[in-house]
Length: 332
Image (tube, rainbow, N blue to C red):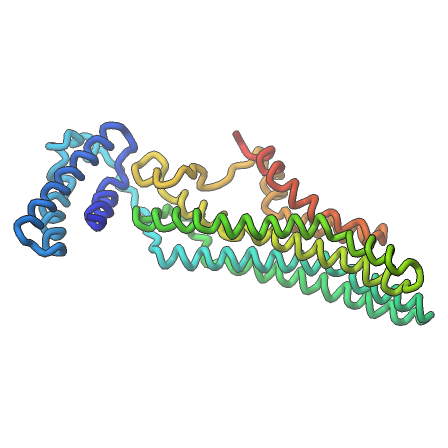
């Protein structure tokens, strides 16, 4: 019966989502179910029974009048939509996850960038060799360059999927159900990563307090170098987990939003917006390049103030503010 149900949903996919159409669909499903049960009782194999049911009830043009939706079917728009297969959906979700991974890793490297100057700066001060501090500066630029490279790689990963924004596309009933289940199953994984990320950000300052309490000023390389570096390591990994935790959510929402919301096919999942509309062009540009803007602010503040011990806080703050800013800038 699952095959018949999926076929029925495909038949009604482009019809308006009205009570009249829903009633007709339920009535037709009942007729198909009764016929299928009758054929099975007669000893027909399941596959043969399904084929007979579909051949008898599978042409909506022929049975629309008996269902009372002849006018609806005749007035139905015949707009062609590109059907996205389940395999294509899986590939799109995988590419979206990879894109979020590279962006998250790029942010992590940017947060890690002050570690070199902090550690090698403390070593240089301890041994009295200023040239050692240059190693830290070199490592800083390497981290930033690597982070920017990852941002660029991430931007290219989705180039093959631009047609989703430019063409009218749709997914089948079975694919939509599959995506809805996958999205639900991913929520526990998302919760674990996000919780772990928040915990790491919250306790990232503890190494400084603990090591300073235990060692005091006797081991300045550790208390002034390695201990502060651990703050960036903990915060960077925490931000990475928070960013990557929702790697697949946007992809699921996008795919589940492809179907026309005015039709039966558009009601598999309560996701109504295919494309986010912002209050202004400036707001759209800001939110589209949000993390690139945060990176620019981080670098400007860090290089002008040289206060690397505090400027990293921009990243967790930006992560917290992103969702409320999106809500503020979206058209209601």
